[in-house]
Length: 404
Length: 79
Image (cartoon, rainbow over all chains, first blue to last red; front, side, top):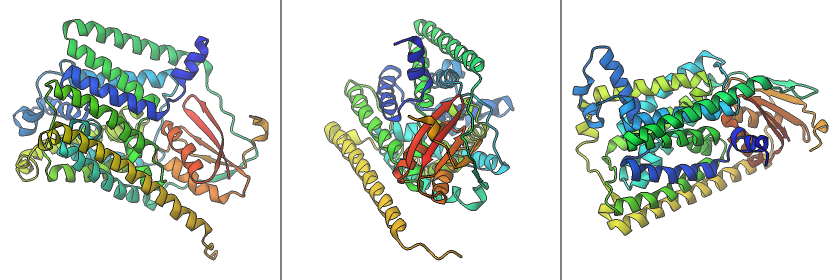
């Protein structure tokens, strides 16, 4: 294999989602074993909001929510912080390798409105439930925390309403089907592609060198940064989209991403289990109404916005301006939740139990139950898919309505 | 693949539009074609790589070609 072949096949072309999600599942288990925390992003986004409030002269460090998630240090001294910087570096490298960075401007103002509003709703809901598509779903379910199951089911329901809402006529820009007699010529600037590739390599290796150098003085920080780099490569290259996993079940009947994510959690759960058996403390959150309400808001918000808390990260560095607004919305929403947390927490969250399935059903029972519920979710998706296309087929064979 | 024989009859230019709109518009456009006609979908939404080809096949259309050229992706889909 020549270098050109290698580059085209592995660095420029998109990766298949299933192996990438499985890799993310395995890596996130190792990440937990090494750092003691789970792969998560919204907690750190909320801290960024906290730092901005500090700059503006407020004292968010005295609020209950920031005492809960800790506001000490800077992004560079926190595991979540360097991991997220790594994710951005990974996303940017991967996007540059494929010459996939382009300033993509929204076609209409309504897109900015929905990006910002959806981002705020999703950010608020995610932090209400103490996690997003990661900590309350993809890395939360493998922690055997019951709240993640509440959140996942509520997110599925919320995304259904989000899908209905997002396809309302007010969000549909007129699309013109043009009659043509030849294909549109596609040509990228070869010089630009070459320069971008080199820049991507420079960012990739520079970040890696920095992370490795950090790992000698602060092993957890350095390794977390490297994991972030890998997570970033995976989500951009394979375009891993948790929003589409939920939304497209309802809109087009596509289930590929949802199935991949369930399998990713299945490979992760056994790894997390082994670390817990060795003595690591699992991350368990309140299984209260907050997880359900948060999931409903999150599911609705991510579909309206078009991307979740990890989805906006790679799309933002690809130059999709729409997702800059989603990211800003997420941070605003998460910070708003922190503002009102002390008033609502006793009612919806802190008076409820933190339910650890491994403690309630015993280690083997909790593990079995988790795999049983994952298998049932997979089966439910297969049934839904069959029903979706069966009703499509019967609609096609039904007599056509009279043209008006 | 014999590229020159793939002459699309219609084009759907979804440049600038984010998910799910490119995939939804593609599925809505296809029934407007006659059987055997080819639709060219042009988009710069990278996510479409995981949506448009699968959706088109799932809904009974034939994906003839996917061309990725920098940020722009083109799909040729036959009804």
